[in-house]
Image (cartoon, rainbow, N blue to C red; front, side, top):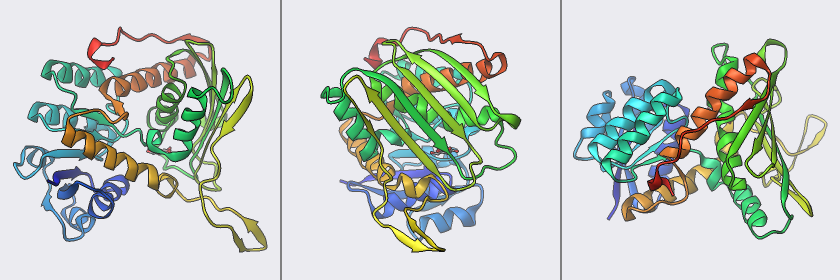
Length: 326
Ligand code: ISE
C-alpha cells in the first residue's frame, strides 16, 4: 500500500516536499501537485502526479489520500481546515496560521472531528542533532537544564519580510523546538530589536525556570546558520556544524554555510515526511508538532510581537490545553 499524497505549493518548500515524496519516502508517492502557476507545479512534479491549480480541488480529489501544505503562510489555516473537513491527514508547513485566533479555529475543527489529522512542519524535531540533544537531556547526561542558547540567522530576506515576520515565520521554530527539547512550556518573554528591526534578541523563561535566549538575525549576510546549545548543571550539549566536507578555497580552509534552510535541514525534512507518512497510514502520532503545538507557537509569537513594542517583560498566557492533546 502506498499513500497517495498531494502537495499544495510548488515554491522552495513545496518542490522540496515533492522531491522527497518522489525519491526518499517509503510507503507514499506524489499523487498530485498544485500551484497557481501550472508550469511551476508541473516542473516540481517532474512528470509525476496530477497537476492542479485549485488547492481545494486537490484536497477533495479522490486520487489524494493525504495532503502537504506548502503554500504562502496566509493560506495555511483555510487549507488545513479544508483537509480536516475532508477527513484527510495533513502535514502543514509552519506556521499553522498567521494569527492565534485562526490557529485555534483549526484546533477546534480537529477536536470536533474527533481525530488527529493535523501535523505542523516543525521539522527540527526530526533533525538528528536536536534529537540527540533531547535524548541527552532526558537521560540526565548534562544535569538539570539552566539555559538554552539559540541562534537563528538567515543570509538575507526580502524587504517585505518585516520585523514581525522574523517572529511569526522564523522565531516560531525556536518556540516549538525549545518547548519540545525542554519538555516545558514558556511562561514569560522579553524582546529587543536592533536598528531597523533586525536582529532581534528574545528571552523566554519556562515553567521550570530554564532561560531560553534566541538571536534572530534575518540579514546576517554570510549564510544560513542555525545553532543551539543546551547548558545543564553538569555539562553542555550543542548542535555541531552538520556538514561532512571541509573545503580549501579563496585562501581559506573550513566548513561552509548553505544559502538557506533546505540543505541544512535536508535530513530532517526527509525524516519528517517518512514519519508522517507512517503515522498517517497507521493513524498514530509520530512525535511531530500537532495542531495544539501549532496554535501555541503562533500564540506565543503573537505575544512576542506585542512585547517587541513594549520591551517589557511579558507574562505569556495560553488557554487550557484540550484533553485530547495529552
Ligand atoms: C523559513 O520560512 C523557514 O521555515 C526556515 O526554516 C527558517 O529558518 C527561516 O528563517 C524561515 O524564513
